[in-house]
Image (cartoon, rainbow, N blue to C red; front, side, top):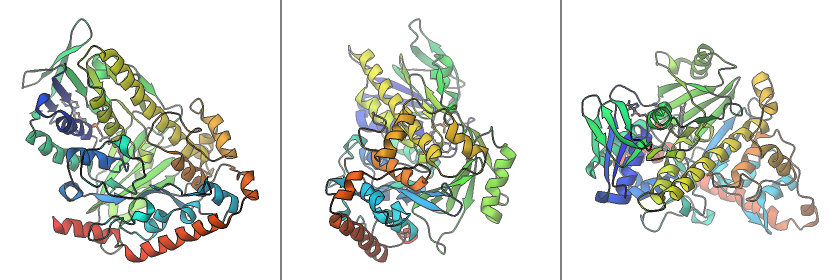
Length: 518
Ligand code: FAD
């Protein structure tokens, strides 16, 4: 039975893993985390998935326990600016379309085309985003139970697998502060914290790691080693030689330049969303946190130099970015062939990464640690457990890759080589056939990537109808059906959105209130 774990790396991945393992196994598992004082963490990674709430609930942390410390805000959607045309925007909300007469409201919308804006017509969240509303009332109640969103009855531990109904929001937070908060959480529960550089790794004749050697703290031995060393992949890729499968042929964005822009948002308000604004060679993210904005330009180095990218980013922010230091990052896009080999599991950037367009980095980490707990070794079937883990983790990343490639193929924007090439570049194997299928019938569970990868058919639909570059056709059968109920539902969406916009507090007011209560 693996009873002692050594985690190398103290970024978001390292500390999320350490605290989760302690929450799962308590004193029955010894956890040591070693992190370098000299190698910095990646320093970005601020937007998350709505399933992240299960991570906090597993640790027994309420929003008031961690959000103020991590400068956290709410994220109801991703707002896509200029992906269809200059000046256009749409949302990918955390909201499933309703079903009317057994057919998705998205299909009814395509049939009726009440406007050009699928998101405004079929989602309440789009209106809340435009109006910069909070998903909670000042007393804490969640927007509206009639929309199907409910807080859990108790703070019992839950995992992503239990999120059957779509929860309406995720969080945006400072990932460095989260790692700091989890350092306290983990060490309070017995994680041994070593601040030192790992300088060597010893491997036995079976290819199992026996210990890592540190500069000043001696050797750290364990049964299981978790590689959270970021893009270096120090244990899995470097020491054990596990190959890395690049996604670069299908997703060419390989670089980013980031800024932290201090900002008081009391006057202008705070959008409850992450913004992805299309640019000449990629896109700029904008993530509002309490007290600052996290922003960066993700671009393809084949189309843009680092200097051009930094100039574009600074131009986007104007004087607010003067005197701020830019952080240039080279991204390793793809995944390790297997994230778990022998007694070494890579979690975080060392396992794999795709550009942060749909905020999947921390989701990959959460998925990996939930799966690690479920597949934890120590019996006669370890080989099968490892195989099952590797399959699940690889499927998640491969599925997300398909979803991201769709963003570029389906974007109507077509004004330079970067955007034109995106339409003709190699696609992951089955995506071309799937797109043809979706043009005839919007995505459903049977026609998207067939394994769990965090995205449901509704996300594909929101992107296809928002991006506007694919010729999607309505279902012919709807022309022969009575549309009274669909009309009524479209009116209801509008009325509910109006009423919520009028009664919910602003996002800024809620976040300020949460921080005042601290
Ligand atoms: P790192 O942060 O790189 O940490 C590596 C750790 O290993 C450090 O503690 C370092 O000290 C330690 N280490 C390295 N070598 C040694 C050694 N020899 N000895 C001891 N310790 C060592 N994710 C999201 O979910 N949402 C986002 O919006 C998002 N945006 C992103 C934007 C960009 C441009 C990039 C590149 C990533 C983004 N991510 C995002 C991903 C997210 O940043 C990462 O998934 C997350 O921060 C985890 O990083 P990590 O812990 O794996 O690696």
